[in-house]
Structure formats: structure tokens, C-alpha cells
Length: 321
Image (cartoon, rainbow, N blue to C red):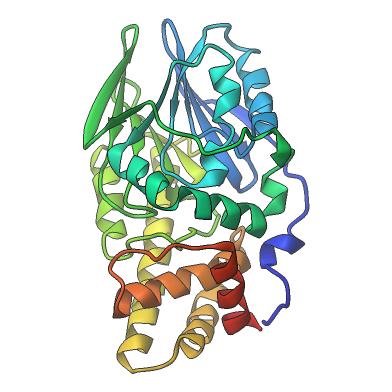
């Protein structure tokens, strides 16, 4: 099981991109388990949900949008603060972008830990930051924030931006098209891809997923994995994510309660979850971060500690060295 380099550094294969229409106004840009982008094409403007990791990567999204509409891309929604989701934003602003929208909690996280997160993520997953030199200096800052709920009207199309609870981060935001029953979940929901939980709230996440289910979405664009195009697929995505989060936290909590050290808890939890989830994308990469956060939450840190490039490497050595 032990490996000397970050699991992500072994992940070098280019992924095949799909650009699919889910409803009259909703599209999904997906890439075999790499971070997804959602697209809402309204009557008079376009909203993009999560930008890709660099402006050069965002250009590929824009190119595909331009095959189906010439409407201006006015809105960018950050489902949460992670660098891999937001550093491509400047490309859309050059396309007529007017607002970068995020929850106030997401804004607060950028203030508190945006710089460290950026350095940490680029170090962890170089493949996901193609042409990283195209990222402008500094961070991606929201121009508009909200708490709880905000509605954006793209002509007659209603787009609800909702905070349904904490999970992947404290700032998680979904975009919901009530008229078409399509939901863009960000990393609250994954499909055949391992949830990254290094900044998570394990005890809240299952309820947040049930709050998504209560909307009864018929289609869903997850943070990673294929777009879910039927109610049955949506249910599978919600249930799979909830099962992973719940089983991981239960295992870690039991180990911590028994007074076991983190490395023992990690090895036990890895062994327990691998048969069921080991085939999911980025399983080996996520597990050390996920177990470390779960152990923190089960012991003495209700809120996630900041990951820095240095802490990443220390953790990896401690658990995988």
C-alpha cells in the first residue's frame, strides 16, 4: 500500500472530455472523473458553475459553449473555494463576465486559507493545472456573495443558488433549476469518484445530501464523474457519496475512540473501504487527506485545519512513508 510519491503524481493520463445537454438550459462538461463544469444557458446570458483550474483549461469549456450559443457568459458561480475549481475564472471575465458569485462562507474561506490552498493543490495535482502560468497573480475573488439562498433570473429562467448545509466544505453551494429539476452539486456529490474530504464536515455531510434529495432532482451534475441523467442515476450518486462519507467516518471514529494512533486508523480504514470503493477515481490520493480530517473531527478539531504544501508532505510521510 505504501508509496513514496503523492498518488496524484502517478496520475498523468489525459482524460476524455464530454459536453452533454441535460435539459433545455442545462449542460455538463465532464472529464472521466476530473473536475466538472456546469453550464446554464438562459434566455439572455450564460452561467458557468466551477471554472476549471486555469484560464487555458477554461478556454476549452468556452470553445464548447460557443458551439451552442453566442450569448455572453455573464455569471460564474463558485460552488466552493478550492483552487482547482476557481482559478480559471479570468477566462470567463474576458468573455463578458460580470459577476463571480459565491456564498459568504466561501468568501471567508478564501480570505482565511486561499493562498495556502492554492499552493497545496498545485503541488498535489500538477496534471489538473495545465498551463498554470496562465493563472493571473493572486486569487479569484467573488464580486457578489450571499447567505442561504439567492435567485438569479436569466430572462425567464429561474436559477436558485442554495446553501443546503456543510459537507465538502463549509461554503458549499448548489445551483438548482426548479423548472427543469436539474441540480449542479459541486463536490457535495461525486459519481464513481472518491469524495475529497480534507476540508469536510463529516457529521453534517449526510444530512446535506438528504437536503439535496428532498428537492427531487431528476438530473444532476456532480463535482466529478459522469452527468447523472435519470432520477435513478441521481439516487445512485447521492447514496454512493453518503455511504462513503458515513462508512469512512464511522471507521475513523471507532479507531479514535479506542485510542489508536492516526496511522493505525488510516491503515484499518483504507483496508475496510478499498474492496467497495478502491476502483473509484482518486481513491489512493484522497484517502490520507480524508482519514486525517475525519480523525481531526472525531478528536479535537471541529473545523478543518488549513492544508499547506508542507503539511501535505508531512501527512503523506506519516501515513504512507
